Image (cartoon, rainbow, N blue to C red; front, side):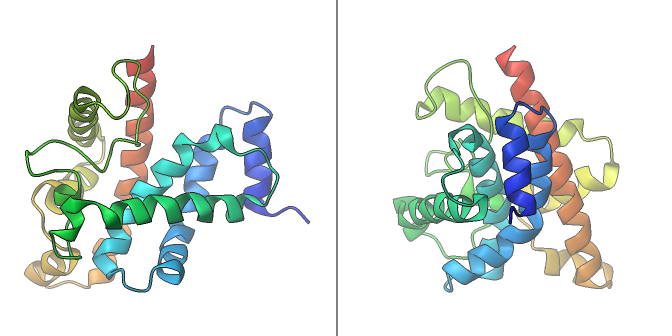
Length: 203
């Protein structure tokens, strides 16, 4: 019997323009569990940071899914390879596993590395430094363009200011779960804005 994700992938293959966004919404809640199951050494911070990276990585390769296996099986294989690449880079070996999202996207020279797969590029090849620079600028622009000021705030604190959710909650003397949920919705909004920016860049 076809699962929800299989039906969404089938809609995408059939040309449904709304399916890609639905796939992203499906992935964001399930990816943390997949990551923890496959990589026991990941810290909670790693899982948090990798969730949106892996969702973007899967979406960027959605056209390559041919339906020969279940969508979940294919997606798990895709993120496994992505996370292994992430873990094996010299940048990550040199840093603690509690690296923040902002540090993830910067190499020793301050240029973007980890977010290269988040958006399509109609310019230089995806592995070129020019494309990496473009991706970093688009991520920052996407945060600035978010309509919800609380989403802009939490992403600025978490991504740009390198602050942990626990630290933010403790400072405000509130439960962490409140900010975990806020960050989850903010990431969804960020992903949609990145998708829109990618379309604008490609047009």
